[in-house]
Amino acid sequence: MSFDIAAIRAQFPILSRQVHGKPLVYLDNAATTQKPQAVIDALVRFYSECNSNVHRGAHYLSDEATRRYEHARDVVANFLNANRREEVIWTSGTTEGINIVAKGMAERLQANDEVLVTELEHHANLVTWQQACKKAGATLKVAPILNNGALDQAAFAALLSSQTAFVAMPHVSNALGTVNPVQALTRTVREKSPRALVLVDGAQGVAHGDVNVQSIDCDFYAFSGHKLFGPTGVGALWGRYSVLEDWPVWLTGGEMIASVSYQDATWGALPNRLEAGTPNIAGAVGMAAAIEWFSALPLVEVKQHEAQLIERAVALGEEFDGLTLVGNAPEKIGVYSFNLNGIHPADVGFILDRQGIAIRTGDHCAQPLMKRLGVPGTARASFSIYNTIDEVEQLFIGLRKAKEMLS
Ligand code: PLP
Image (cartoon, rainbow, N blue to C red):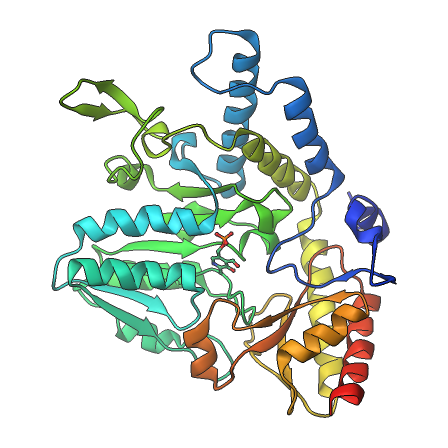
């Protein structure tokens, strides 16, 4: 399949709507992506053809729902190149995936242990570890970034030691677009802190490239369906089987037990052991449809297209008087964070919205990172495969208008 932007856009019904009487220019993809018709159809099909609860039914519909739901797990496992399908745990999203790991880790951390995170973290991969460390009396260390928003890899390595019990890092920064060399960083962890487990926050990583958990060699990889053209409220946590096998249970209830008496209970096998209660069945099916849809695209051309969008934005920004780009790491995906001198980012967002252009403004759930960069927040345009060069140019036309009106 070749990369045909018009054909791709035609598959996203929402892209043809208007807001404030203007054609929608949707540049808030790091917050959530839009959904192609294939995903919308998969959700409708599930509810109209085979809605039923999974695993425990003794009837046709339940069997069919279970088949579709478990097929969705296979799709995720293949997408991540997991060794075993049991390594894929359904979650409500990245946040829940990280919490499952952090809550379990809090029970295992000792007072002398250290957990290493980076200055690039979203709060989901920071507050969780901060609280786990507090609970266990362990120490949280933070690997710094360079001024361009790239991780300082030498400092990261220097912070690793035999005391390091856990390392958590983002695949891609949501606020700056920095891509971390997660494979090389994990290798450094293995060399310097052999007992440490490694979690990669993949929320922003999955929609922009090929993820291979075996070659990254991490222990956990968490992501959300909604940032990958799938539904909200569903995601997956991948964990290495030998690590997940005896991971502390997180929720107790149906699905996750082997046997129960009034006095005690024993836990079932993976993956159900970490999936108590009725799951988001339609969400899982929709997420699999999104992965199948995305995986059918020509990845090299997808990456080239996204690189062209960010290159155009950077070039236009360089010509724009009074615009400061925030984050220009050499390895970066289509996240364009910026400030207009003397203008609050929220005002920029408001004026753009009136022109039909959707961006995000604020601290992007990364308050310590904003503090480190010396800004209260940024305006952030984030691009996806369906965005066009024309839309990038419209962003800058909108910014000129914002500047005229606000300065
Ligand atoms: N981590 C990163 C890097 C993110 O960008 C986000 C969401 O923006 C999250 C974690 C949390 O994802 P969710 O809200 O889908 O759980």
